Image (cartoon, rainbow, N blue to C red; front, side, top):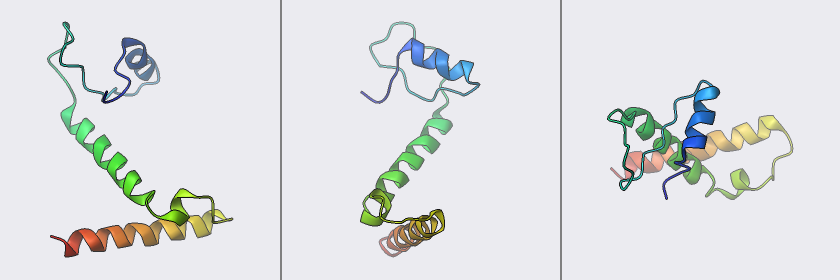
Length: 89
């Protein structure tokens, strides 16, 4: 299951003035023609980045006491991810 694809979740997102970017199941009968694929790709990239950040122990666990220190650790982790992606290409 890719996400919470039910009609109730889509309606709640629309009521909150958000665009639901959860793909429809392939066996659903009334699939609309339009689906925001670009938004879904962006959402997937954000989720992948969050997953990569959570691999760092100091980001995943509440080690840092202040918000400033936590932001610094996240910035360092993001820099390591960026450097790794550049050098592995």
